[in-house]
Length: 199
Image (cartoon, rainbow, N blue to C red):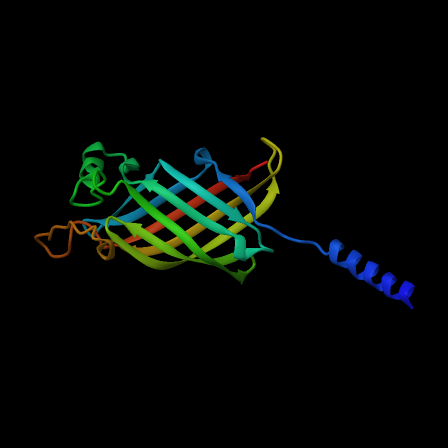
């Protein structure tokens, strides 16, 4: 009887050890292949696009371990670039991002939820200037695929979502003579990331 009991203990122990465990893979964003971008309406008739080029990222992801997955970013507000130096200087000023007083725009994820077919919702805190608000960002994760440039794997992350800049005290505007405003309050955020698994 003891031998039989020991056999079952050994068998259960073997099953427990053989059970696969998952953990989120740590990734590093390749800035050369990524864009943290945005788009706003200008003069009620056209679109102006821009991006932030200087940021720190802390990304971990596994479709099998969403509880351990995270998407954290610290973006330097002064790195804004709209391909117009005069406009960029204005955007860095207190009228907009006040980059000297508030140097970082931060996003810290709190929860990642699967929505099917590579689609997810990332809930987290977004901080700009002196305001922090919880936002839900829809993302699409592409891959993982083999990384031919350095081994390991690579993923792509796409996000498209609107923000009202007034919610974050990015308030400057000016009325047009014929109605409307110089810059739209709504900003379309466009994020395209390519990230490589850390070895």
